[in-house]
Image (tube, rainbow, N blue to C red; front, side, top):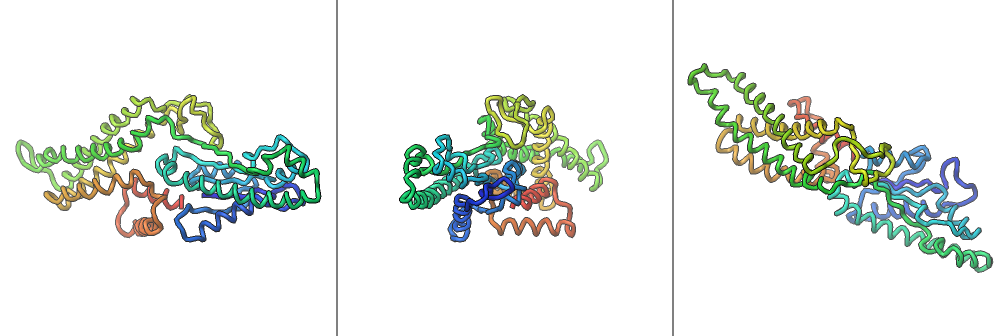
Length: 366
């Protein structure tokens, strides 16, 4: 979670104004991380890390470099001073800070675990800045009657003083996508299990010399792998058609094409690859089925029956847990074990594509 401070920084900052908002918000983030209590991984950063460009922070959130970012906008403190000193009635506290996020990245973890903690952080930050700012203004108002009049005309500059505008770059929409990203993934596992067990009697027919010579071992392995992959190609297509039936947009139509602008859900969900979005979705489901189905095939060939049933129980319990909890939210120990697995991949064997992609994504998003 980025906490980026642009207050009083950069070439466009107002000289002679000591920043107040930025240091307080970033100080709260550091205090929570150092407290030892369960909290989010706040990462205070300077505006210089993004070239003093708040849009660059939005791009970082879109690129999944952070789950969300709190931006203290340029000259946030200077605008507070201007409001109380000049009676600027147009001052809007919500322009002081921004919260940038993507709920579509993982709606379950975002709304259930992350957003509640971020809301608490925003409340605490608003309270701390309000207390410090009100104390400072009231001290100066004892000798400056003009400040008292401006406080009456611009009360929002005293309370709440600042606020957080929230921008969801890619909202989770349409809500009919919930089955496809939750229960639908469990059905994907079931389909992979079903086809694995369904074809076992057929594969073993190739070993019996009834009307044909028996296959050699290498040929038998090639037939099993090739037949399973071919079956998953069409099964994944049928599975992907279900999402089309739920009217999830795979063919464009949303006018928001910028990666740093908020999507207007009135035009439906955006797609990343235009008319090629559905083939990409199909291939993702295909790779997922292959990753699970070929693992089952390998285990069945190595340990055989009845131990394959024990393997299915293990995978049935293990896989759904990772469907609903993304790798980047796992503990540090989990990440270290994945790193170790990736580090030794060349010494053992080539990891399946799906596992390698997942590990690489996990390492990138830490």
